[in-house]
Image: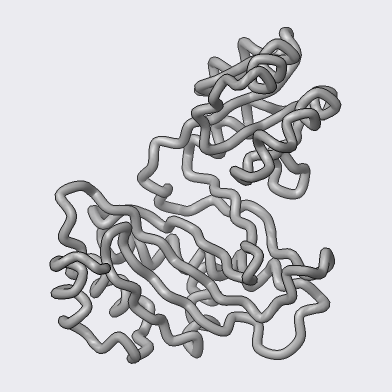
Length: 236
């Protein structure tokens, strides 16, 4: 059952209306009522068939104003790469011994996992640990790379990984309620341009069928998908 503050916020705007992106984000900021700095998230409902391998939407995007989140990064690499990973800001660094510890039940407190190509034979053993959390390193998302320092720096600076869920939706954080509207619009524009670029060739009909923005504890505000071209153009 929704809480009192959530119900009150839901009654202060038209839930069925589709707003222009800036207006929607302004609403999200005013509808936030939590005592902490809530995350602002967008959900894209895509016209894809997530059961088909050639219609999966996955990649990375660097938000121009960052995500506002302190991203914890884990790196799986050989001993000679550990120092550069740590100097770049990695929170957890290790090789085969880290893989073994995680197999033994140790928790991995990380938002992103990066691996060097030569470590993937070991990291592959962690499918049941990393897979369900969406943490398995993947070349397509830039998380399997020999240049671990660059990858760590980029993710620490606001680079995000996105992927569709089993329903064909993509959920991504675009900032914090404390961001000004221009920052949120800029991040949303960059992300929307990336989602548009990632359209699978096999996706038929309307690609972005719905967009909703919300804060962590606030109600969802629908965005007019007719404005997507404007957002994409703004990011270019």
